[in-house]
Length: 254
Image 1 (cartoon, one colour):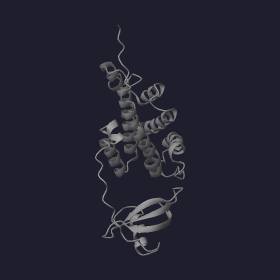
Image 2 (cartoon, rainbow, N blue to C red; image 1 turned 135 degrees about the horizontal axis):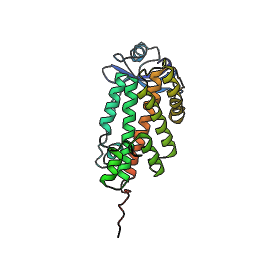
Image 3 (cartoon, rainbow, N blue to C red; image 1 turned 90 degrees about the horizontal axis):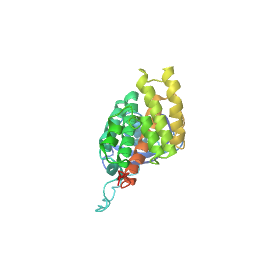
Image 4 (cartoon, helix red, strand yellow; image 1 turned 120 degrees about the vertical axis):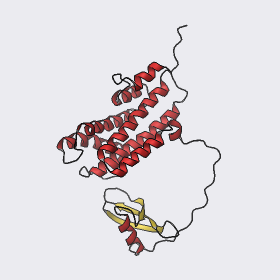
């Protein structure tokens, strides 16, 4: 990623192996914190070398952080409370990101969102095998698909209209990736079907931070698609905590 400015370099550690600074990348509208490492890929080694050479001013010395205050109370973070398995799923998503395969990134994130919608419904509907079967075992039911789950969640007031729109765009990109063998911007079919959904996600979640670039597949998948999935995953996990105790009771015939 090309960058236009670097400022305020500071050593991250006493051994001078990394440098914290603020960088303005061309694809971003604002400068962002950045840790330059000589062993990283991308722009990290170059920025590290230029900072160390004093091109952006003297590198401030490392200052140890104070010992964190141990918190006894407070409980488990909402994300883990809402869905304990989410940490493993995020690990899998990050593995796909590290591999850099667009299809893998798209599919693992969409699967995660679809499963979280199912978990929300399972936590809200009557606690019965019928409910669980409709969600997890019946692919033909309105609760067994990504589209059906998101629409039913909206109809029940479990997600907002904006979240429903994000779900629709994530699903649209997922469907293109699932049916096109070549997930590449040179593939006109992929481009024609995926770009409108990705651009919608950009305006919903990222327009204040990023400059739009529809010719950079890595930017579109890693920053726009995966970014929107990550934002939505956090909100859905929080929703699971918020609806605790709101499960629909089974109606008594008496």
